[in-house]
Amino acid sequence: VQLQASGGGLVQAGGSLRLSCAASGRTFSSYNMGWFRQAPGNEREFVAAISGNGDMTYYEDSVKGRFTISRDNAKNTVYLQMNSLQPEDTAVYYCAADTHRTPVFTTAQAMGVFRDGSWGQGTLVTVSS
Image 1 (tube, helix red, strand yellow):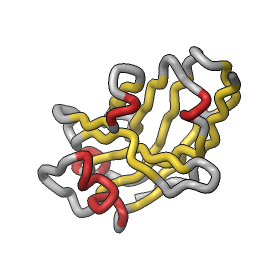
Image 2: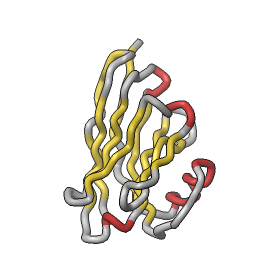
Image 3: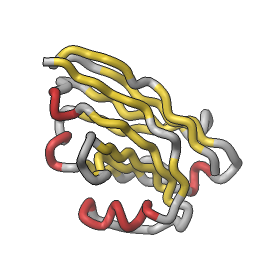
């Protein structure tokens, strides 16, 4: 599956952005989808994930209550609504597909679940203070 992320940009602290990730192929609805981010000098980290049919969502603790992951399987697209953005949210954001179709996982396992899947090219989010 090929993934194309978009929607990044420059926003002031407290502002909002919505990221989108468009996927190719007919099997999108069978994949868990995730968002990850990597700030300069840091390792890539998990942000949020959603199951294939959207009934399960997972969030990294620092984004709970601020970010919302959703998907539209008819459009082969997953979204990340980011509210109350803070400078520490500045990073390149990547979407990923769990092509191994892991049935259940925890947030601690998320990087391992998606590591060998398909990844998009990343979109830069910059939050100014």
